[in-house]
Amino acid sequence: MLADLTAGAAQDALARQEAVSLADVEAQALAAPPALDALSALSRGDRVKVIAEVKRASPSRGHLAEIADPAGLAADYERGGASAISVLTEGRRFKGSLDDLRSVRDRVVLPVLRKDFVSMPYQVFEARAARADLVLLIVAALDQKTLSELFVLSTELGMTTLVETHSADELSRALDLGARLVGVNARDLSTFELDKTLFAQLAPSIPADVVKVAESAVSQPSDVAAYREAGADVVLIGEALVTNDPVSTLESFLAV
Ligand SMILES: O=C(O)c1ccccc1NCC(=O)[C@H](O)[C@H](O)COP(=O)(O)O
Image 1 (cartoon, rainbow, N blue to C red):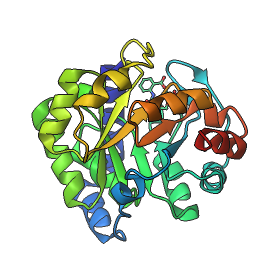
Image 2 (image 1 turned 45 degrees about the vertical axis):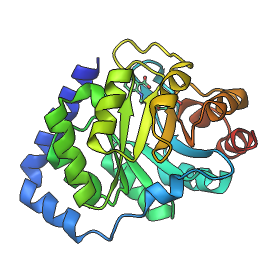
Image 3 (image 1 turned 180 degrees about the horizontal axis):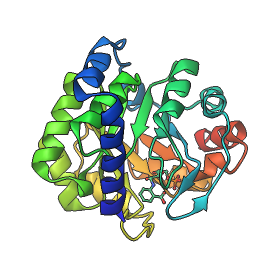
């Protein structure tokens, strides 16, 4: 599944490259206003922070929410206390787009994450051209050379990279890069199985100065509390926010 998602996202990026060349998208990226300092926005504070996700659908859950106005939803997230917004831009299975990201960027002042299956420099330039402040790189989807090249490119463009892991080996590959923002996804992206204990298993191996993100599987405040107890600085939440009232649900998660 992860290989299919990554290959599909690359195919779609190559199709967009027919319309806007690599040189043009690079020029747009370099001309964009500077990225916001997402790492500072997400660094450990007294309370857990939330990256709130704009997520219409997913391979594991199918249709989740219509979200006709992604910018309006992001504004609700901002009002509810989110520290950053994640926008799924993958079109085939998540029904997202870069237009969603651009409209969110225009509405909120929070850092915005491009959440996609990135495997090519073109997609990193696109993210910055759309004024994303963060980009996701999934260790399981990339060999170490490609991962490193995309990480360096994202950093050179001024973005923060959320490096996503799902095992001890992937975590060590993320730390080898010098990643400052590391995610542990409870969801196995190939089987969709959720392991809410994975973050607690891997977190002790993440250095104290690395910002730790627990991703997926939050459905109630006690899930946020458990991630926080296990050392999460940040929790990334999608489904629970798009299928419930976003402001009050977010507030309940932040009250733990
Ligand atoms: O959500 C999926 O089904 C999925 C399947 C394959 C690859 C990625 C997938 N989701 C991306 C994410 O990791 C989540 O959108 C994100 O962590 C939020 O998760 P949740 O709060 O459980 O919606």
